[in-house]
Amino acid sequence: MILHTRAASPFYKNGFVAACEDTREAILIDPGDEIAELIDVIRKEHLAVRHILLTHAHMDHVSGVAEAKRATGAPIGVHRDDLFLYNSAVEQGEFFGYTLEQPPPPDFFYEPNQRMTVGRYVVDVHHTPGHSPGGVCLLVTASTPRIHAGPAHVFAGDTLFAGSIGRTDLPGGDYDTLLSSIRNVVFEFGDDAIVHPGHGPDTTVGDERHTNPFLKR
Ligand SMILES: [Zn+2]
Ligand SMILES: [Zn+2]
Image 1 (cartoon, rainbow, N blue to C red):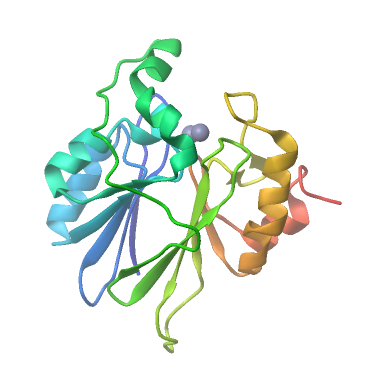
Image 2: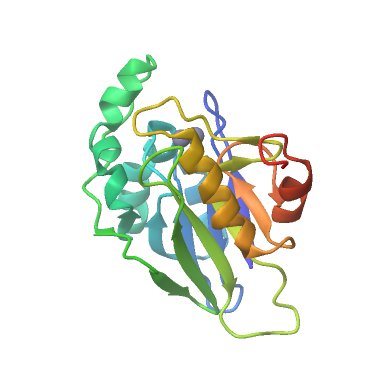
C-alpha cells in the first residue's frame, strides 16, 4: 500500500492518502489544513482518488474537504450520526476562533458493514462512537491474500491515540461508549494491525492493548 501522511498547524491533524501500488486508485482520509500538500502528493504519485472518507466531522478533520472535492471530484462519505457536526463545521471553527470553508454536502452516508474496493485493497467502515456519535474507524486490508500483503491498517480518527484516547467532552461524546468502541471493535482487528490516529504518531493495536493507561484492565 502507498501511504502518505501530512499534518499542518494549528491542529496538527493527520490527513492521509492511501493507494493501491498496482492500480494507483486512492482514498483521501480526513482532508484538513494540510490538503494542499496531499493534493501535491496525489499529482506527483499519479493517483486517482476514488473516495474522500471522513473518520468523523470535527472541523479539524473537514477543513480541507471543499478543496479536496474541487481537486478530485471524488464522492464524500461520512457517518450519518456526525451530519450535525459536518453541517456546523463553520460554527465549530468560530467556537475555536478559527475560520474555514464549509464543506459541500456529503455524497453518501456509511451503511452498516460498508465495504469499498480500492484497487487490490478493501476498506471496511466500522462504527466506533464515543469521541463523536458518528465516529468510525476505517480498516484497510489486502483484498486477496498476497505474500507481501502486510498488516492491516486502521485509520482511527480521534478514537484512539498512541498512549491516549479521544476526548469525550464535545457534543455527543461519551466516555463509556468510547472505551467499549475501542475494546469491542478496534481491539478485534488484531495485535498486528497498524493504527494511524487522527493526531500524533502511529501505533499498533497490540501496543495500545498492553500499554495504554486508559485501556489497561
Ligand atoms: Zn475529533
Ligand atoms: Zn481531531
